Each structure stands twice: as C-alpha cells, then as structure tokens.
Length: 347
Image 1 (cartoon, rainbow, N blue to C red):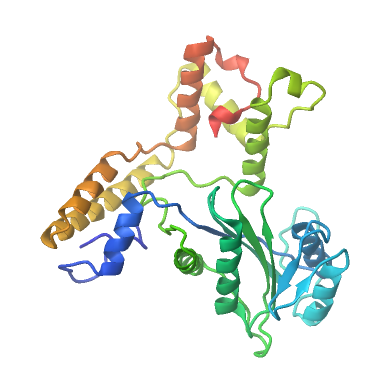
Image 2: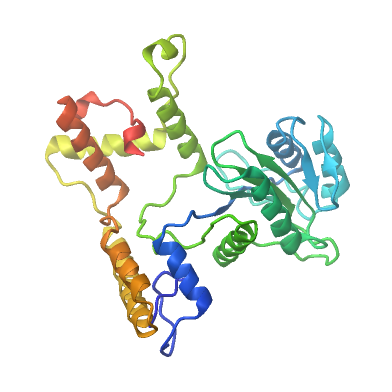
C-alpha cells in the first residue's frame, strides 16, 4: 500500500499499483521540503466583550484595516464595536449563561473561532492576504460572518480570521472545527498559495519526520522572546529587563536536570508510540518508492530514499532537553545545578 500523505501511514483497504499526477507532485514537494503552510485555531471568545477585545487586538486598536465578509474595510478605534454590533452576537445561543467559577471549566458555547493562516518568512504578504481572502470566501461566505486582517509585524506573514460560530440562515447550525477540518483547510490554503505562484505544501509533521508537537502559543512567544534577548549585545541589554522564562519549560528542564544529577535515565514516556508511528510512516514511504520505480520515476524514488534516510531520530521532549544540556555542558563545564531557567538552546 502506498503512502497516504494525508494520513501519515494509515493503510486503507485494497492495493494500488500507481500514483496519480497530483500524488506524485505532493511527494515531490514533500521530499524537496517545500515550505509548509500553517492553519490553526488560536482560540475563540465566549462573550461579546471577548470578541470585541480580540478584534481590537488583531487590528492593533484600529491601526490595521479589518476586512469583512461583505467586502467592507473597517478601520479606526470603533471598528471592532461596529462589527460586533453588525453580527448581532447578543442573539447567539448561550450568550447569557453564567461565567465559570474559579477553577471550573467554561461550558459556555463559543461565539467565534479565531483562526490563523500563516506562511514562512520571506513569503510576499500581499499573496498571503489574497489566498486568505479566497479561503474565507470559499469556506464561510453566505454562511458564517467573518472579519480578517493581515499581520506583517513578524517575519512570517499571517492573516487572522475571526469567524462567527452560528450559521446566518439555518438556526441551530454551528461551525465545528475538527482535526479533519484543519487538515482539509491546510491542503486548501496550500493550493491557494500555489495559485498565487508561491511554493507551498501541506503534510502532517510525522510524514516529514518531525516528532515534536509545536509548543502552544504562550510558550512559543516566551521562548522567542528569550531567544531575541540572548542575541542582544551587552550594550543593547543594558537597561532592558530579561524576559521571564516559560514556567512549563522551566518545570520540564528542572525534572530533566534532577534525573541527570541522580544519574538516572531521562524518562522516555511516549517514545514507544512515536516509534510505532515512525515505522508506519517509513513502511508507507518505502511502498511509495516501489510504486514510483514501477512508474519510471526513478529519480524521485531516489529522492524519497534520501529523504527517509535523513529523518531525525525519534526523541521525546525530555530526551531532547537532556541532549541539549549535555551538549551545552561539554563547552561550558556546567553542572545540572547551574541552570536556573531554560534558554533558547532548549527550544
């Protein structure tokens, strides 16, 4: 059975003798390490105040234009309030349920989904925006109200999309986002970027040999701030307050250092499952190589072989931290007790 790039190694019934042209093109993009698109749900508000606050945040308090599903461009400090009023969120189901008590899960239904469409650094921002416009129109127009804005203040250009959860014309129908939905959206956004003339791909990280899940946004932003601070010269750091380290990463690192100090092996919980997934992925890649050779795609088959040979070893986060510590200790003669907080080397 050939590699199903979408399902990273899960096999379906029956056998196949050849790959289609679209599948061959995706194999080529993957082994060539074509830039991967990113589509994620970054949260969603459960009350009107939260929706308005997020719209103000992504519009940088009115400095950036918000494009709506009606083709209008709203800008200024009152733009967020105008959009919230126009969407009639006060009529949404669950809007007036009581807020959660301290320590309890918030069971109120979401009013909006916050979605981010992103491309790697160097991608023309105007093309990201053009692809995002089409993406939003094809998925939500005349069904779910939405507003979007382009951000270029970071190296990777990205569009923030706020989508109302309740359908405009079918009472009770809501927008639910599942794993399959995100997979389909990634593939769609990658295709739209290619239509803009930008090389883009959408494959699961396991297919590419990546085993570590991306950090959640708060951790990622904290680590990025630490990295930026570490790159400053001593003169530039003068008078600047060092960013706080991530408590999650600090806890992880402290646990790893305790194991190293005690001479114990670092926990490999989860490694067996990750290794099983890697073996499934490799088996499907090898089956794909066989198909490619039968179809005369010998050069691409050789590329796939090199691609799989260079996949990094499967490691858990704890093992990666331990290896990073050992590497740092070689050059700095450090002991486990010398590190108080994780830095950029432990990303």
